[in-house]
Length: 155
Image (cartoon, rainbow, N blue to C red; front, side):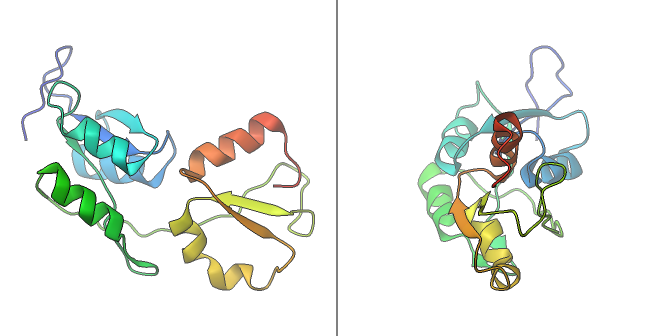
């Protein structure tokens, strides 16, 4: 893969789904290196749109399989439609964490906001806490940032 970043030709421009701190960032840095320039996309559709434009990006990291929750069929469809090709694979063990504001306990929580895949990975855990409503969002890291900004002590 030849990176074409005008400012630093050795620095690859990689599209990731999510914001800084997302698992896609970890995978991109593992595969392409720490100096990778990350280009965030808030949806997988946006990721494929950006990755398809050589003026925007050199490549993308996208999840297509999950050993707990299964295949991410929507991403297979987007890959097919984009005309892009798979160039490699990253195996990234995922360990989910339940985060809340300081002093908030699991009994205080009314909602958990996260990406549907993350919620699926944790479904057995949340069965023990029926008082918690699971709220799907497009990006877990962005949800965490919003909860911190809003000082939401119920989520």
